[in-house]
Image (cartoon, rainbow, N blue to C red; front, top):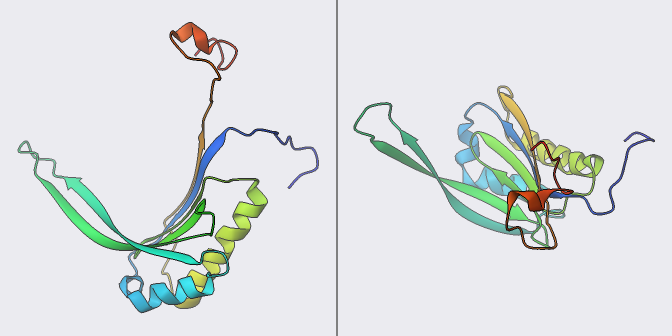
Length: 156
C-alpha cells in the first residue's frame, strides 16, 4: 500500500465483505458454470457448501403481503472457514473474518472476479460494495453508558 500507513497490532475489524452486483446472468444459475468457477478457485476455497438463500419482499400494500424467492447459493470456504466466496446469478461476494490488509483482500477478490469473467460474460457491473465491521471488546462489564469512556469518543 503506502509507506506511511498505520498498522494496528490488534485491529478491531471483525468482518469484511466485498460484493460485486451485476445484471442477472442466467448462466450463473447453472450448477456446472458455478462449479467451473469454484474449480478455478479451489486452491483458495477448497470446501464447497451449497446453501439456499431466501429473499423476502414485502409489497407496498396495507395488507403486508410478503413474497419470498429461494435461490441456490454456492459458497466455498478456505480450510480455516474464515474466508468465503459466494456466487449467484447477480452477485459475487467475498467475505472474511480474518482480514489482514487491503492488498491481500483485493488480490483474493481479483482472483474471484477473473474466474467469474472466464465462465460468465457479464453485461455490466451495477454496484461494488465494501463492508467493514468493527467491533470493540471491552475487557470489563458495561453496566452504564459511562463505562464506554476511554473506549469510544465521549461525545457518542
